[in-house]
Image 1 (spheres, rainbow, N blue to C red):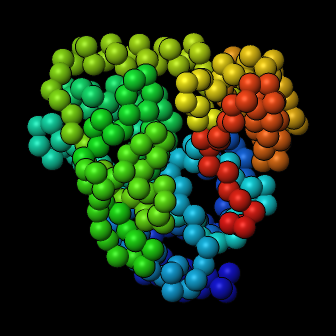
Image 2: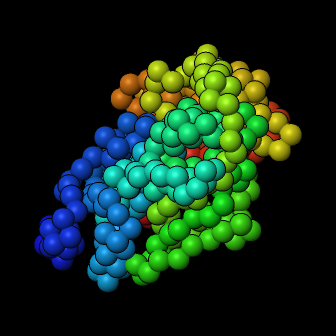
Length: 305
């Protein structure tokens, strides 16, 4: 830990919790991933900025996670600093219909906050795993809604530790993409604009969508949600099922028999198991239909380790 002495001293000085040799499998929804050198848990933008500045000066590899719900971590772990935003979770009203939310707040809790304040527009997001920041990062969406429908602006920290923000068209929100997909900026907070609604109607819609998720998705197994992006004009799960791949297994990873769009951890899966299933699906679907599937889950590359 000598190479992280300055970072550890900084964490002690600013009262920021940290762990050495944490296991990524304990912080990812796939329940896969090896040791990291050090994981830090800032609860404010100021502490995060100080940490990012230190990591930049020390020239260490940096990985940012929230709930780890859309990533496949390597079995060998991560050689560097992991920033876990889970304690940056404050949510508050800016005005009657505007919410400001720290990036580490669970998306489900943000949806419940909107419900408690009779605000409609976020129902589509109820049940999407992950944090508000992660949802903004990838413009998460479901059941006809997307974050771009409600997202007004995001504040972020740049790789040198300085702060800035993007709003409106600067966010470049597209299908599972934002401006943050192409930068190393770290989202710290979101501003969301909703509309006043009837609390009973909002709750009914949230309950309806959650029931659909439970009925159709393999929520009882660890996964990273939908494994593939939706190809234009098609549905990834339907293509995979059409190719007879439901239940296809490699080690502890399997194409869900409940929903072919999900690769799940049926027990003891490694990152290589999951990648083998993903590659087999891609090859089989392409050879059979001519459609090339693109993973939605972020796969950490070997060079990032």
